Image (cartoon, rainbow, N blue to C red):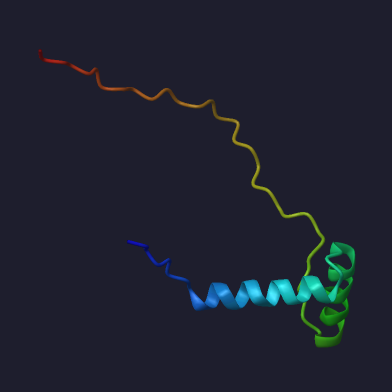
Length: 75
């Protein structure tokens, strides 16, 4: 008996669009990024943010030990 794999139509649409954009730009990431940047300026919305994300400061506290309950085995 052959099982049929369920496909999500939204995921399929995303994959189809991704493939079309990649093909349109010759599978070149630099060309794809340039196309998106051009689209970004044309539409006035920021699609690509090249700034580094803010990171939370590292905690100065030492990690606490985790106490584990002893395991008892009855034979």
